[in-house]
Image (cartoon, rainbow, N blue to C red; front, side, top):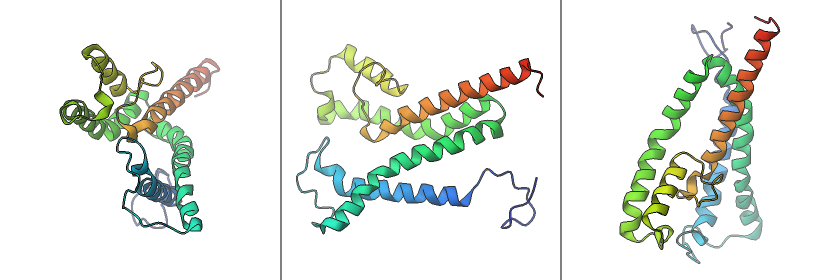
Amino acid sequence: MSKAPHQSGAAYDGSFVPSVQGLRGIAALSVLMDHFYDMPKGGMYDIPDPGFLPPLWLWLQSVINVGGHGVELFFMISGFLIPASLVRHGSLSRFFFDRVLRIMPVFVVLHLALFAIGPIVGYKFFRGIDLTSYLGIFAANLFFVQDALGLPIAQQNAWTLTYEWAFYIWFAVTFSMLRVGGKMLGAP
């Protein structure tokens, strides 16, 4: 393995690409600005004038609204990084274990808090939901299958995780098929 120019003694495995991390930062900042300006105007609070930002010039508002495309940029970056991560991990179990450790701790804490506190404080998402529906929606959202089951998403800010897990599974299946296909053809 070759050494990266910025590292003095460690072998460089290609897993950290500064320009890709820079794109991630730009994507994150653009999504943050878009949410900061637009999100409170609709959604669960429906605040007509959120007060976070003053009225903006139309050109600046247009620039901020482009930030919504940061999510698309994240998806493209994932499409680039996931296959390399699968190869680097060397096995599906290590890959998925790493994914679970990165995503699930924070997600589960927020999920449990939402479903425990939401009904108590009168969050409108829970209005008119009986216990059976509550449990079904809880489980479907916990395992990111709410869209597939036609159920509502509980954590509005986590909608992309459903797609992220679909990417992980899709790439894992493809990775497995390529490995099996390669072994069947006698490839090392």
